[in-house]
Amino acid sequence: MDRPVRPSLASLSDFQFGAVTTETIEDALLHLAQQNEQAVRDAAGRPGSFRETRIVEFVFLLSEQWCLEKSVSYQAVEILERFMVKQAENICRQATIQLRDKTEPQNWRALKEQLFNKFILRLVSCVQLASKLSFHYKIIGNVTVLNFLQALGYLHTKEELLESELDVLKSLNFQINLPTPLAYVEMLLEVLGYNGCLVPATQLHATCLTLLDLVYLLHEPVYENLLRASIENSTPSQLQGEKFISVKEDFMLLAVAIIAASAFIQNHECWSQVLGHLHSITGIALESIAEFSYAILTHSVGANTPGQQKPVPPHLVARTLRAAASSNS
Image: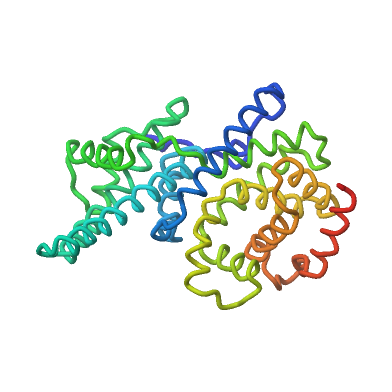
């Protein structure tokens, strides 16, 4: 049997802009903003993040092997993230109840082994569920999933596969149509196009996809740099790190930083104009956009890449910000 044709880079970035009315865009942007505010509030006190590099890379490579569009891979990572957070919360809740009632403690080692043994199955179920949300493109069937798991040495039945999907769905109260940073990026690019941005939205879109992949793969290093920059301290405290968890769930902030970094790569002379537009659209401070985009650029082109220009130093970022602020005041 012939192998399925993988989508090319061109098809991945073949996104049509300017086809939606301004009223629809305004309503959609408002809805995304409200979702984002709720997600940031809900993230307070959340027990960490599970967007580890190896896990994200596994999801991305699996999505590529199954010829899924980029939005599916991001959706799968977010479903898996929420599911694992729920598992961690349930474990903490059980431990609290046992301490309160002074009941016999559960065998935590056995529970850990059970979660570990089923992790790959749950991960693949998240990818399959994400593919079903984009049913207009391609759905991954049970036979494909079972063959893949068997190739890795995991023998499961169709019943176990369905039970795994149901376990994920029940844990998330069947709320798996989660927003992803890509939705925010594409919506903001649409607005930028209507606002007369000098860098074409289609040109920015392809670079945004690449940088978004990078942030997902280097999630912890990028956000650690952002945390240190925001508190102006190289050794943040545990409390500062815990309070910063909600920032990691701020997809609107991530989207504007991704677009700003993409604009700098595409045409750095237009960077201040793009920053001004993003600030006007979202209300996010210019300094915050610049700090985050600088963290992304540092990890994408490096601080000292041979043969390439260095990312903007902090004092030049500040100078650009002042120019952008004065031109947009």
